[in-house]
Image 1 (cartoon, rainbow, N blue to C red):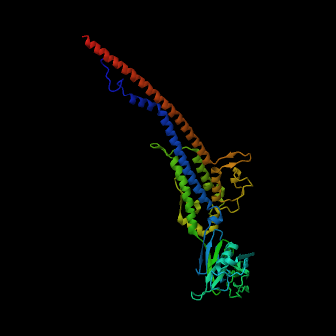
Image 2 (image 1 turned 45 degrees about the horizontal axis):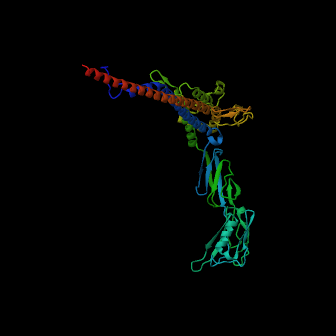
Length: 495
């Protein structure tokens, strides 16, 4: 066998290279499955992104679906020191006046002073202080051994659970101290006065005469708990606190200073800047969804499909649902719109060639100035949501049977209808579109994982079999090589 040479292997072959090549060929289906899994994983990520974009659009539409959410108002006052004002979307434009006669105050009492706050004052166990606050009677008692002014303050705080705060204050000087036990009611107004104060500790005294007409009758009554009094639009109104937010619909009023001689004028006006910001957020959210769908749905001869979701029916469902609610006005509805507020285009929302929206600020501002209520009516639900009493979560629940529900309100419920799950009358459960698509994709990913695992197991066995076969070949070739060498030596010695 003169033609055979051994290069470190019995066969003279690159055995490991051959095995690796065969294993690589056998593993090609695994690579294909891994690529399919990666594609599905990418789809899942894209659907998660799209779900977030659609949720943002729903949130933006929801913020325009009712009058209180759509409208915004600002308040200007002739004097900023009288009160603070804040308007909600339920406010009504107009001018008002306010005069603050009195601020709300807390009730405070002080017992007569003692020289040492640490000295025990009670002559027997069970003595203490009693009073009534907010309709509840309290009795704070101490023992004779722990009856200092500080101890009594702790007992009062514990008994009233902090509703009446007790503290010890030195109203004298360092050389001539006078420590007084001070009681402060938590809250303001006449209903939060402390009454019926009495002490069974002889060394702790107080004149508990109550106020008359809101005026203190005792030097121990440091401040009287009084209501705030304001004259708003000519009406004298009392409140237990300085908050008059329930007087004018949609307007929060908190009085700051009292001056019976000063009348402040405040004016409620639509805040069109804030309204525009809400509308722009809506447009941005709509454009984000549209741009995403456009990128996934485009096709060019040179580059092929635009994205992994190309041709997915879910994208078409979302796009058609949104467009139907925003641009689905019938010819008769457009013809019947004599005021010119019936479509987005009339209000300054221009539809671009790629399906996105762009706001014409000049036209938008003009329409807001022309009639804010009619402008808002295109978006908000003016007649109340009416679905005929359908059960929450069923498909019928999202269908409005009323005459005019408003574009933003319709869009909100249309998005809910396709993305939220529901249970029908028979008890069958249907998942929302995104959840259903995610389940389907995750199921395919799990299937690929199982197939990959099975094939990798078989591939491992295949590789082990090859290594065993080639090891046997090497052993055989090694024996043959040994025999060749023996025969060669015999033949050479016989010559």
